[in-house]
Length: 319
Image (tube, rainbow, N blue to C red):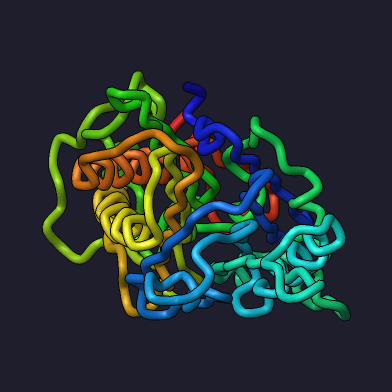
């Protein structure tokens, strides 16, 4: 176990970014389609092809998932991924045609200091680049969809975490943290997600000595949204994946204060890629939420500073 979403066998993740525009794209794919569900709890989501993930819809499996910066403009990343997959012969068969199924979600990073005065939307090309870069050892921190992410007090990032459950079931999470709220308590270095930390993976400070009861720190504008993916090798239906995505939102609430606000588009995809038997969906959901909370803190902890950043990164602030 490497604390990566690709600890689920067969999954690959690729990142691409543009340092000038201060934004990027992350793509998750596999050699074969995988079952997927989704749940949205934020009040301002930006999505593509999420309606077809409902349990009553025809298509139950997808070819890739895309997380992107760029707000609604970033949805074009999914077009770049779909075009590249179609060229590889991937996609839902309709007669002699192939239509790749590529759901996507975006976060708002248009006010993070990057140069957004492009003449051609860059996200389709970034999506294709991220797909080409897909590997089973993806990086975390200031990469991909988390490249230009921010929180209320610190630079955001892309985080991952995984867990091995008895019986060989693996659950893992990946998340681009761009929240209205904060991942840390007050002005200190303690993470809200501290109770779920494993082996000092984000500093080992433990829980904060006190927890403020007043209004929490929040951004002064609507440059928000945390988007993530939970994955498992357990054999699940689309309805089960939808329930897994719903349960994983507990991880947002454990690690970000506040979360699921009217100004966030908080969203989680959940996917099944494997045949491990699972007879306890409640436990799997709890494990997914725990991994998601850890992944959020790990993404903040791994972020790297840049002179053009509007906010400091965690390790530059707290050592």
